[in-house]
Image (cartoon, rainbow, N blue to C red; front, side):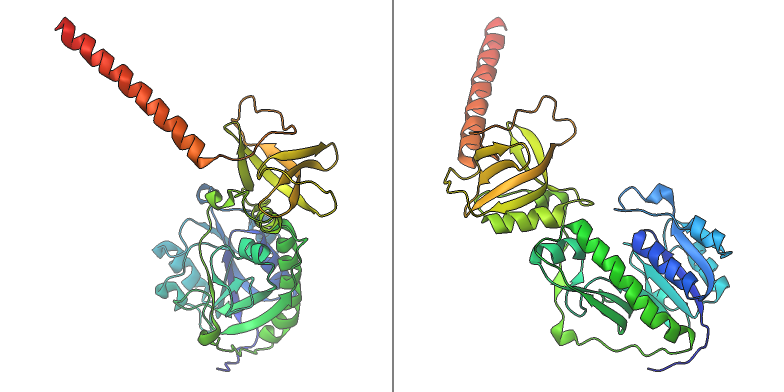
Amino acid sequence: MDKRIERPRVVLAGSVSSTRQTLAALIRHRANLVGVLGLSLEKSANVSGYTRLDDLAEGAGIPYHEFDNINAGETIAIIQKWTPDVLFVVGLSQLVRPDLLAVPRLGCVGFHPTRLPEGRGRAPVAWLALENRSGAATFFMMDEGADSGPILVQEPFDITKQDYASGVIQKIENAIDRALDRWLPRLMAGEWQPVPQDDAQATYYGRRSPGDGLIDWNRPAEDILALVRATSRPHPGAYTYVGGSRLIVWRAALEKTIPYRGVIGRILVTDEEKGCLVQTGEGLLWLDQVEFAPGAGNPPELRVGIKLGYVVEDEIAKLTQTIQTLEQRLSRLESERNGKA
């Protein structure tokens, strides 16, 4: 499809740093921006990296409107009044429904940081870091599928085993600038040539939750390090337990020279600079940046000999014993009550 509309009317909507970065690029390239929509503060509680757009929009003299639901009738009505040719929806977790997809003359433009059609779906930053897989700043036409529309521009970037989630985000942001600097001049000149994705090559990422950061010390050290990198800030972090308190691991490092062998999950060495050295299912791992989760009370000292995590069989045995004790006490109370009756 090749439709030419020189200096197309552009509206942008979103709620995070990538939205703001896209807005800055549109302003920098003197795009014909006719409106900006920012997610309201009241609806930002579950948005990681929430960012306001009002100052940037108003500073450039662009009409600005806040919304709770991008698909609400009143929001769609505002967008319709702006009569956009292109609607950018970047960094917004809300799905765009058909009624809104049909508003702009050329289409809605979405963003995803993978090499589409690979890696469609949820939590791409964490998955890219976890799998050490290269990504791409990809702007594409939105349709009713999941990141499945034709591609408008794609700028690749590499990820290494040293990249934490924050580093992946920085690489995404750098790639966004390169992609938009390459594509926006063509868009403003009237070029619109989306390239369909090859659905046969599509792969998908599933949802991740904070509980997926639980460390299994039976895994190899390299796998645990990958989990730490993937779940580190701005994500909730990888975690384990020490004496009933949750310990968050923000950064870690492999150890391949110290000739130690210990019980899996046990701290073997402590060092003021390197942190705690822990035996994993295969190899040793330094936990060099940790903190106890809020509400931990008086957490135990991390010292040599402490074992991290829980032994499931031991915990079941303790729970079983506690239940038996409570059942015995309940039985005695019932007997005493029946005797008094």
